[in-house]
Length: 120
Image (tube, rainbow, N blue to C red; front, side, top):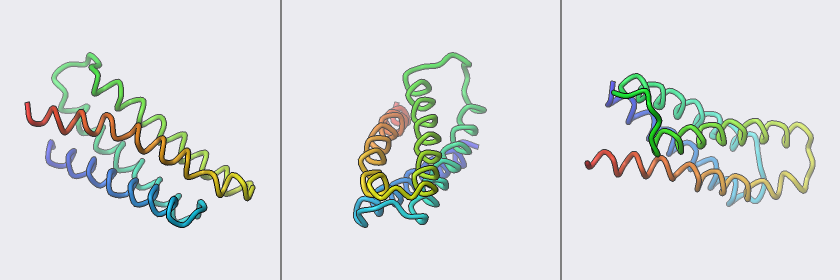
């Protein structure tokens, strides 16, 4: 199950990174970016669920707390992207990448902690 958790978390990293950086490069939010955000959220949720099932302790640690925050931010980010595309406000569509980059950077915190913990 650990191998599956690692695979899904890395699929989340790949999907979310493609979504965020392709949005940044294109200069505006598009439906294909939303699809990558959604895949990243799905993969992260599945990977996190596997990791939670493997956890020895129900207590939250730094990795667990930052991971939960990142997952909530990813969810909010994806829902907000849906709203922005639905409303079709041009300024928000062109400025959305700033929010995307911030969430992506914050998501990298628990990811990096997890990678570091794997070496301990």
